Length: 204
Image (cartoon, rainbow, N blue to C red; front, top):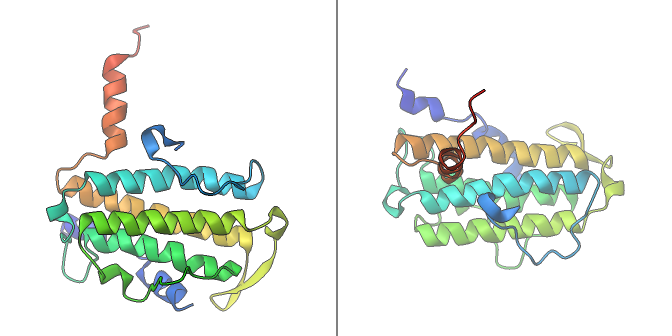
């Protein structure tokens, strides 16, 4: 199998259904607007993981050359920009499952293909992460076990947050593969290599 096709993800169908329905140092900074961010509990744990994944996605989006935003590993597979915007669309759509309302003017249908301009893609991603964080702040830790209908079955708010971060992390992995295939080293890897060279491990 051509290795270019190995990066094809299996969550396309999953999210298609759902749509129908940093620690800023090396990771990138989280929006400062959410002043009610929880300090403990399941929401705080989710936001800790979100800070890492969000930061890496945004740093990778910055690191990818603008001319590579239309690159895709094969026919029928999402391009660089489409993967980033797919994540943004999920950030907007999934909170609807726990009762959030889309911001005025935001339309997620067709968002993936709405632009290939690097700066526009990054702005959409940033806004979507800010919105996602605001919906977490409006939630209560007491909602963790609240039941919701989910793909013909049942889930909880906690489960929805786990799905949200899993979906996002899956596409982070896809984007890392895209970057590597285009000669782009993930920025946090570069950071680690610099730190390692600066402070090499001591020999026993």
